[in-house]
Amino acid sequence: MAESLTPHTFGSPAADTAFRSALDVVRAVEPRIAAAIGSEIEDQRASLKLIASENYASPAVLLAMGNWLSDKYAEGTPGRRFYAGCRNVDTVESLAAEHARELFGAEHAYVQPHSGIDANLVAFWAVLSQRVESPALRRAGVRNVNDLTEQDWAELRRELGNQRMLGMSLDAGGHLTHGFRPNISGKMFDQRSYGTDPATGLVDYDEVRRIALEFKPLILVAGYSAYPRLVNFRRMREIADEVGATLMVDMAHFAGLVAGKVLTGDFDPVAHAQIVTTTTHKSLRGPRGGMVLCTSELAEHVDRGCPLVLGGPLSHVMAAKAVAFAEARRPEFQVYARQVVDNAHALAEGLLRRGARLVTGGTDNHLVLADVSSYGLTGRQAEAALLDSGIVTNRNAVPQDPNGAWYTSGVRLGTPALTTRGLGTAELDEAADLIHTVLSATSAAGSSKAQYVLDEAVRDAVAKRAVDLLAGHPLYPGITLG
Ligand code: PLP
Image 1 (cartoon, rainbow, N blue to C red):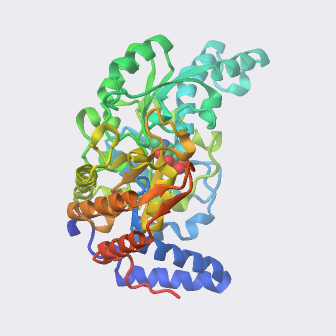
Image 2: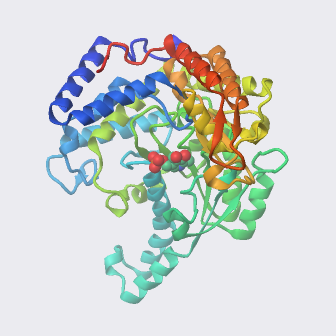
Image 3: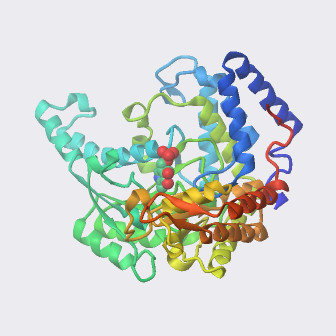
């Protein structure tokens, strides 16, 4: 796996010196914060990170974030700012957008969103602006909402708040931001969701089409947090076109597989959707943040993200996004993305061979959803027992989950982080063995959905094997703390 990373990624003397010096500077002001930062690298070194939404950003990405770009206000877009003195931020934002367009083959990129949730909010309002607000302004013969009469404004606000969205249901793997009530999207939109076929666990496009024809959404959302298979975006676009919806894809989880050219053709969201949102910190391996890609027709609407729903752009994070996208444009990133999927296959196969039950019976992407009820456990018990044994995962609902979203019956496992660290398929098979060993040695305490009993000898033996597994793939070995 060495070729998927520049070999010195987590151990170059220059990076070690930079991080050591940075910690010294922080320690001189607030030693407890320096200690927490140091403790985090120790935790990350010591555990098998199988959280599907996490990764390890490179030193170049991390260092591009920690600097004086943070001090600059830059509302607006490059060349059109509401603040003076933005020439360096203009360079940073333009480069980040250019790299993003090239990387994904997009007509337009907006790199300001601070997170995936923010990117989705920008995208929803871009579609509302294009399809509801702009026509209302045209009808009223004005260019700006400030020029509408009180009556027209009241009517437009009613119309904006009365639109429909169709997205994947939460327990099929959709995300809270796709129109669910706890999120602002659920309060803004009248929402329906499509699930997966109970027999196969797969998206049933005929069923999506049936619901879309009946419900007639303004926005059809595709994309997921916990679906282990591919989505055919060409098919989704056909459905959207048939019902007059805008297709929005949230590729937060699998953007790295799109960037790395693993998801191409029908499975490339950028080729088919009018608007695509993403986080930059999951499989894409950049800084924590978000981004919106879109067609030229939507560009002017997307660019209004700040101050519509976003605060001032985080210039330092946009710099780190530019660095991450430049890294992802290198051929090595395609090797990485392919290895992420190969590793997920190895993990899934390893678990299945040992008797685990997986939602959809396997994976085609970077994640695996194990149904741990076959071990007599809730997701919460399994997650905690694995953590005790040095394996970091997160619990997740499975389709039609009898244990709900808090306790759940599933554990979601993903390979982007361990692949960055350099682990290959044999090691992911060993990881499958560790997971199966822990879950087989864990039992529910009475009827509790949270308490559990884990054999201590098994716990300690697995924790040692997890450390051994990582020993050949050190994380910043030149940085010693304490
Ligand atoms: N969209 C999807 C599909 C996600 O999985 C997530 C993160 O969990 C988000 C959006 C939100 O991203 P963030 O946490 O950066 O706001």
